[in-house]
Image (cartoon, rainbow, N blue to C red; front, side, top):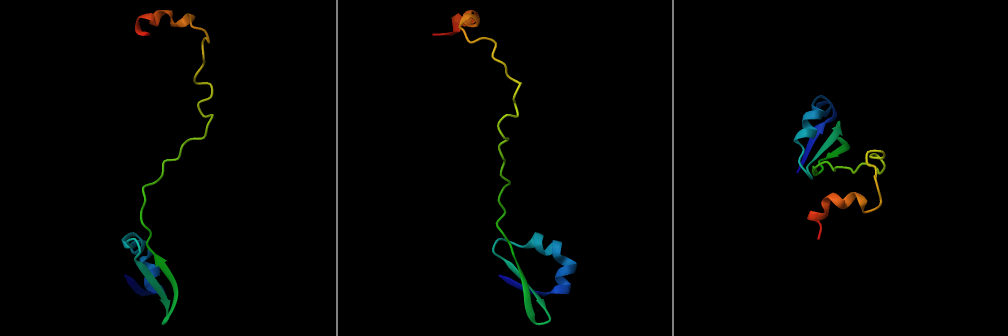
Length: 79
């Protein structure tokens, strides 16, 4: 669905027009009788959660030992 508005009217109500614009709806902006621009509503997608870059946890984990000696206390829980 298209709405045709004069540039002066759009300038005073731009924020309201954008917030009310649904996906695929458009507002055609005119100057005089000539169309000069168009605003088209996009579908609103949830913000993507970006993964943090590797290496941010560097120094938080340390390996105490690479041998099985430290596992002696867990023998009852191991197969």
